[in-house]
Length: 41
Image (tube, rainbow, N blue to C red; front, side, top):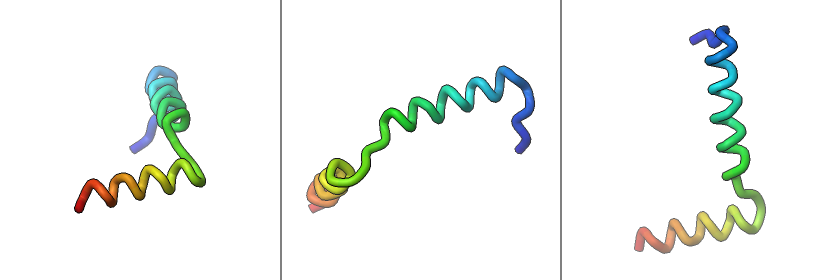
């Protein structure tokens, strides 16, 4: 898949920026994972 059109590139930049803002790291990520695992039981 080749993304070459400026409008397509802009769309992917916007999507990845949105995902980047939603990302969590470190203790916050660990807490989210623990919560998900606990919900499975």
